Amino acid sequence: MGGRWPIDELLVFDEAQTYTGDPTPLAASRTYQWIHSLPRILGALTATGLVLDFVHEHPWLPWPPFPMCVPTGNGAYCLPKGAPSLPLAVSLRAVKNRIART
Image (cartoon, rainbow, N blue to C red; front, top):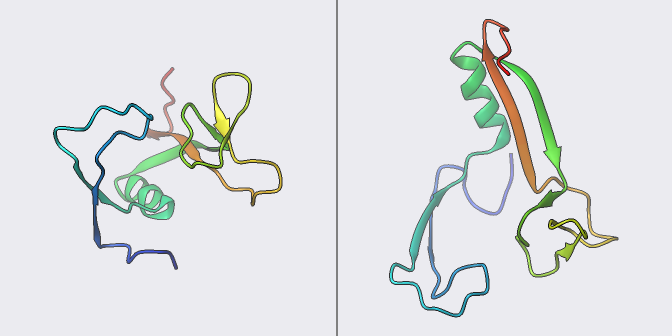
C-alpha cells in the first residue's frame, strides 16, 4: 500500500486554529494522528473473531474536510464535480457470531 506517509509513522500537526473556521486561537494547538488504513481496521476486527455485517463508503461529510469541498444542500459537503471519486467517510458494523444487534 502506498501513500503520502509511512503507515506506522506518527503524524504531528500544529494548527493555530480549528478546522471549522473559528478565528479563536487554540490553547492546545498540537495534535497527533496515526494512519489506520481501512484494510488494517477491517483486518483487526476480523482477526478478533468479529464478522463484518456491512461496510459502507460515503462521498460526503457533515463538514468540509478540504477547501475545495462544496455543500450538498442538505448540511453535508462533498468533493466538486470532476474530482476523482473517493470515499470521505466509512461506516461499518461488526458483529460477534453473526448475531446482528439493532
